[in-house]
Structure formats: structure tokens, C-alpha cells
Image 1 (cartoon, rainbow, N blue to C red):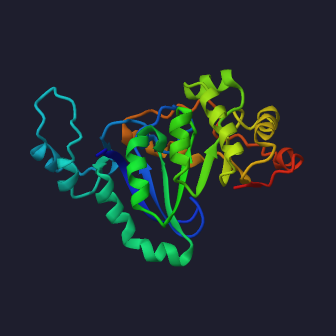
Image 2 (image 1 turned 45 degrees about the vertical axis):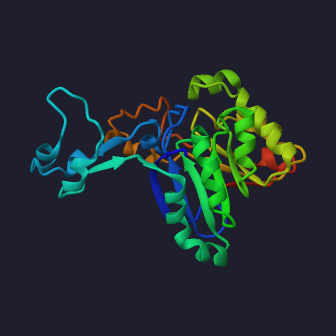
Image 3 (image 1 turned 30 degrees about the horizontal axis):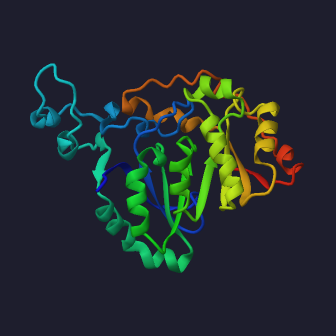
Length: 284
């Protein structure tokens, strides 16, 4: 049996698929997008999130910490259980498929009655495909959706998508060199998976983050529109303008937010470039 590293199970989500949903956030991502909104989901290991501005220096955390002087944090979570201010939180818990499925299916009737379901996000769910493939059959007939960068071997992508009722497929940048510079990985596997997704007829929504001066150029949006054109099961394109809240969680994860672009610049959505190709497009 596989185990999955999960950093949040969030109920009553409205933007991760049809109806009211529960979204499961998988920890760990092979991409390093400088605008990432979930930095706590980047690492493939449990970690401690700390909000130092809330600390009252009571030293309760120090009294229960099992590490020796000079030893790095083990992310055991002992301090998070005793902090009176709640300024320490363990991010990332190993879950077994049956145990997580039992928790998610407590709302089974609610999902089936209101047309909602369960969505998988991250991080990158495809990076824990074995766990996901064990979990999905336990959740049917609930509607399942996945939010993914699409960065995975084709066989892995195909096996996971076959379990999904809806795919949210990201497109970061159409140009291979720019994609590699921005995210640290080649977009060839993503484009190969996108081509298969289109041919498969599976229902999907394409999501394009519009980052000022980075991905919102007319050229990139036009090239993305070209990639998405043609027969497929695509329901629509969603253009997602960057918002300033992206950097607020980095300090808690012990990271510096250095986006490398002007956060305050206006983005330039071009839904017409998609609509001209017969694609439904909305700016979120």
C-alpha cells in the first residue's frame, strides 16, 4: 500500500470544480514557478510552518522539542501541539489511501446531492501517482477532479486522467526555453500530455496564470491559444491574473519571496485571442 504526503484537506471549496467540493492538497512539486501561491506545497517532506509575529516567547515549544543542540528540525510536530498562540503548524502528514478515503467519504451523500465532489491539487498530485491511483477507486461514484501542471510521464498522466471526471490543466508558458527558465523544467512532457488529453476527449479546463511581464504577453497568449485549438473535450480557458497575496506564506515556510517581476504591474488578459479561435475564454 502506498502512502501520500498531504498538507491540507480543505472543505467547502467553490473554484476547484462543479458544486461544493473538498480539495486535497498533495505536498511536493517538481516545478519552481516564481509566482507559486502554495510555497508550503513545494517540498516533498513534512515541514514546520512558523508565524514568528504571533510568538509570545513562552518557550513551550522548546520544552517539548526532541532535537539535540545543532540538530536540524525533524518536523515531528510536537511543538505545534503545545503552542498556545497556534503560531507553529506541521505541514505535511503521511496518509494511507483507505484512511483518507474514509475521511473524504463522510460527505459522500452531500457531494452526490449537490453535484460537488473531491478535487486533487498541490503541489503536484501527479508526483504521487501511485498513492492517487490507489485512492481514486475508493472514492467512486463521487465526482473527481485534478488540478495539475501536467508534468509527468505520459503513461502516468494517462492512468491518472482515466480516473478523473474533470481535469484542470495548467499552461505556464508556451516557449520551451522560457518555460525552463521560469519553472526549472522542460515543457515537452506537458505539451505531449496536453496533446493526448485533447485527443482523448476527456473533459478539461485549461488554466493560464497571467504573470505581469512574464506570461501575459500577447505572443504567449496567442501561442497558448494555438496549442489549445482544435477538437477536444475542453470546456473553456480560464485566464488567472496574478494577485498580490502570492508572497504572504513564504516566510512561514522559511523561504524568501523573490518573484523577479513587478508584482504591482497590470496584467494584460487577451481573451479575444482565444475567442477568435472558437475557444470559450473567461478572465477569473
